[in-house]
Figure 1: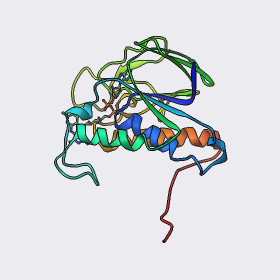
Figure 2: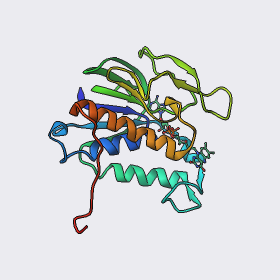
Figure 3: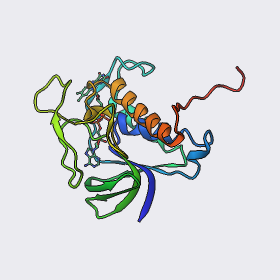
Figure 4: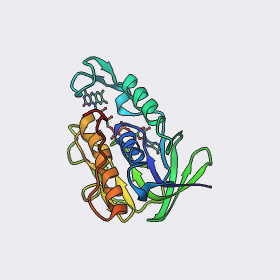
Length: 201
Ligand SMILES: Cc1cc2nc3c(=O)[nH]c(=O)nc-3n(C[C@H](O)[C@H](O)[C@H](O)COP(=O)(O)OP(=O)(O)OC[C@H]3O[C@@H](n4cnc5c(N)ncnc54)[C@H](O)[C@@H]3O)c2cc1C
């Protein structure tokens, strides 16, 4: 069974940003050396339906589907980050030993687990989480997982709409980056962010 440092369930803006941020720390900190990350995503993301006119640095009129494809390609450029298409049906465990099972029968283990599955429903069996009404949805019937600043319990995090952020690209993506920084900070034992600067400046 393949083992990962962090498995992220969900490959929308939140899950992909979380994975990219984690993987971008490679080469900058000793404590991430040898780490591997996995993003598992099913067919649909809310971004598939969007037309974007208000995402900073994204050209007005960009289709969400195209942007999602671009982010997936960007994610694939990081050697420590893998993407797998599939539906997670079961997950259980604790910090250091999560186990994740997909509909196609494949299984993975992870030290940390991040749920970034959007706000429509949560039907993954096995995790002891509290699913509650979404606190910031403009529509009824949307859900989130109860958490404190993205953390559900030791080793288990939520990012994006399932964490309760407003349904805006920047909020979902930012939530994914924040969870990644929180995990890196736990490993470091101090506050960590991942920044790069151009050689010439
Ligand atoms: C019609 C429409 C228009 C929009 N327009 C805008 C806009 O103009 N500007 C803006 O800022 N925002 C817009 N949005 C909002 C934006 O698309 C969302 O806020 C954003 O996509 C949420 O990101 P997320 O990663 O939290 O969830 P999602 O993008 O929904 O991603 C959830 C991910 O989890 C995966 N998943 C779920 N369950 C499982 C499972 N069991 N196993 C594996 N994977 C799973 C899904 O396949 C998906 O990859 C729009 C949304 C819609 C629907």
